[in-house]
Every structure is written in C-alpha cells, then in structure tokens.
Length: 613
Image (cartoon, rainbow, N blue to C red):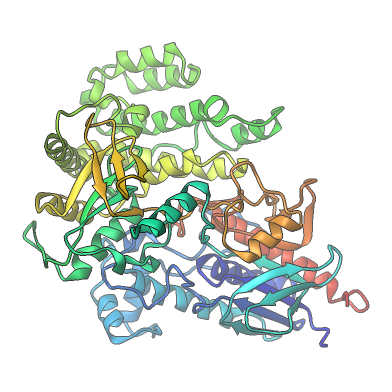
C-alpha cells in the first residue's frame, strides 16, 4: 500500500469545492510540492454536487441575482490564507462571452450564459456550469505533487483510530480508501422519517394516498400528484416555489401578461404554513448612498462576551434582544440618512440615545416612538415574522383576496427604493449572521427567520404565484396550519387558525421543505455511523465542530485530529450556499481555517518516519 499522504473530501458540491479552492490557495505556503492523493467522493459531478447538478429542469432558478453570487474570496473576508480573486457569477458570464473562459456546458446553457445580466436570477443548471468551472480552476491550481481522484459513489462510513489513518468505506468498492484526513462537506441531508412523517407515510400506504415527505423538490416523486386533484402543501418557502413551478409550467402551463393559462394537467395546491404567507420577495433595487456602519451592537466583542458567559445561551433571552437592536440600528440609520422627512429628531441625537438604551427596554421603545412619528416606519420584527397573528377571515374566499393583496403590497414595497430601510435591514441580517455563526447551535428559529426575511424568491415568482391564485390552481390555507390523518374517511384533513371552521380534505399531502439538518433522523449511513461512534450532536441534531477549524468534536468536547466537517448539518452552518461579493462571508473563513489545519497536519505527517501505517 502506498505511503503517500491522502486526503478525502466527501461531498463535491459548493462547500467541497470551496475547501479544495482553499487547499490550492494555501498549499504553496503550508505544504509545498510534497506528494498528496486528494480523493473527491460524490455520486454527482464535482462542482455542483447533487443540489446544483447540471441535469435539472431549466424552470428552476436560483433565488439570488447573478451579481450576488461568488465562490471567491476578497479583502472583506477575515482569513489567514491568501485572497485569491475570482469572478462573481455575472463577471464569469462576461468572461464567457468575451471568450476568456470556455465552460463545460451544453448549448442551451451556453445560450443562457450569453444572455445573462447581473440583475437576472440564473437557472440552477447555469449555476452548475459556474461551479464546475470553479472546481476545475481550483484543481488546476493545486501543486504538481497533488493527484486528484474522483469517485462517483456514496461514502458509507468513516472508521479508524484518532491517531491513525482513517478508512472511508464506499458504496460499490470492496476496499476502503485510506485517508490521513477526512473532510465531510455532504451538504443538505436526506432525512430518515421522524415519528410524525413515518406515521403519515404509513397512513398513506394503508389508504392508497400520496404522502411526499421533506425532500429536495427536484427529487420528489411529483408524478404521483394527479391532475385536477387537491393537494395539501405544508410549507410556503423556497421548496414550495419549486413545487409550484414544476407542477404548473413543468406540466405545460404558461404565464402570459400576468395571466396563467393552464394545461389541464395541474393539481390544485392548497398551501399553508406556520406563518401562512410566502417568504418575502428579494429586494429589487440597488443600494445607493451611505451604508449603515455594521456591526455596531452585535460585533465581535459582543460575540466573545456571549461565548464567555456561564451556562448555555437561550436564544430568545440572551441573543435576540441584541439582534433586534442591531437590525434596528441598520433600519433607523438608513431612515434618518436617506428619508429624513419621515423622522422627528436630529440623527446624531437619535443615534446617541439609541446606542445608550438597553436592548428591548421601554426607553428604547419610547425613543423610537418619539423620533419616528409614523408607526409604519418603525421596525417591528414580530409583526414581520407573524403577519397573520390574530387575523381571522370569515371564509376561504375572503382569505384568497386578502393574501393576494398582502403579496402585492410586499412586491411593491420590495421594489421601491423609497423603502430602502428594508435593504439596510437585509445588510444587518448578513452582519448579524456572521457573528451568530460563531455561537454554534442556537436553534433553528433564527435560520428560518433569516431565510423568510432575507432569502426569499425572486419577485417574478411571486407575480406567478398571484396569477396561479387568480386561476384557482393555488389556494391559500392560512397560518398555524395543522394536518391530521382521518382514519375513518381515509383522507388528509388540513385546518388553519386564519379561517376558523374551514376544513380542506385531500388524498395527497406534500411537505414542501428540505429535511431538517439533523443527525438524529438522517438517512445518511455515513453520518449515522459518525453519530453512533461518539461524535457530539447538539440538542437540535447538529454535528458539533470546533469553531476554530471545523474539526469534529466528540462527546467530551475533544476535536478529532483526523476529521473535519463543514456545512448546514454542523454547528458552523451558514446563511446560504453562496456568498455575496464583498460581504466577508463566514463560509470562506471556515473553509480557509479547515484547509490550513489540514495542510499543516499533512505536512507534519509527511516527514520521514511520521506517517501512520
């Protein structure tokens, strides 16, 4: 068996690609030309991985504009390694058009690239071409001593002693890969059915119904949903948007001049959720003028103090008040500097008093009430989070009218620079996320709130939703949606607090969300084995990793010297798959720290006589 040092990256999607880019960036300083076998394990092509694979429907879009997506570091990123500049997605498309880059893409995707602008929402298959190019560029930048081996299969388990080589068992391969280090970047998880989902699935099988559990929508068995039949959909976020598109345009319907022309093959989607409203539309205008200074009230000093505090942090008690104050700072800074006619105090007076007031205090509320006369100009995060709380409608039809008006108002506001304080809050959310990711597992609510407010669908998707609602293809159910299995009638029944007494019955139920990133219910044999072997898992099911370099922690809190993990299933989870340019993305910092730690250990192991057998 060869004694060449060996590194295995499990997961070839954006996160794995990002780690490889950082290995290439740091190898010259930390590793040199020493031989190394770098194995990339993924059943899908490296670069895009499963979620961003090239063979997807052209109807599926990213929910970010091309100018807001980059795979490359810049000077805003806090990292020990070198910044290696590279193009954001829109600049990469410019390079393709100019002939400076030749991507691995079919003619249809090339045509998309040639028509792409910075404010467009690209298709996922176009993004796949960008990710594949990024992977190939990183691979080409590796030192000549590094040999890359791609394995188009699934990793089933990682075993081995803490102080010795690891054994990575692969599906369809009799002998394991031997690895000095393993980096897990497996991305979104498939979920083992938790008790509620298992019960609903069993009910559906017994009664000949359709139950689609949480899944990546493009991989769901949507063919089981029959034309014209009602389908209860639980979930109103990005997974619902994909579902809506695939079951309407994907079945031959067309949108023309704000009107949906059905094909007759669509089911009728009855959609509701905890909030009962879709995620807020992406903001449709660019920033101008002075940016709010961020972070201000939720910066590194606050984070370090929180980490030093005794006992576990309670998000609502210990963290949320400071988040509210930070977002309020961003909101009011913009309101006072860009829209001063809607304020009643000098900005410097307000800013001084705002900074001195305690988060969540009556003094802070009184100051805002005095300085901002119109309540509509004040930041009310609770109202934003639960817009249908306490709202009741006499009939389902009344709800349809009201929710269409709500979505229309949201679209108007999110495209109106007269409300640019909303964009300031978005910047505040990014800044807060960069700090909160350092705290580890703070529960799932914050991540959901961030996505709802800051990572919603493109505006055109909500225009399409309105057209589908007017056509009767989508029906809104409201907030606090509950679903029960009616054994006597053999149907799913949905109720919502928004329309008291209304009941929707259907023979199909779709859970429109990705599986929770929890190792407690994961279907991944790799992560189940890691969990069962002794890796630390938090109360909400995240894999615990060292915040310094993403090494996997055991239940005693010790970092494993040979195993790293990065991604949404870990305590170092981030706000999304990609980073906006010049926003200091935490994922870049994590990738860099993990790559540098890995290269340092590999360098030490390559010294004569020190490589474990």
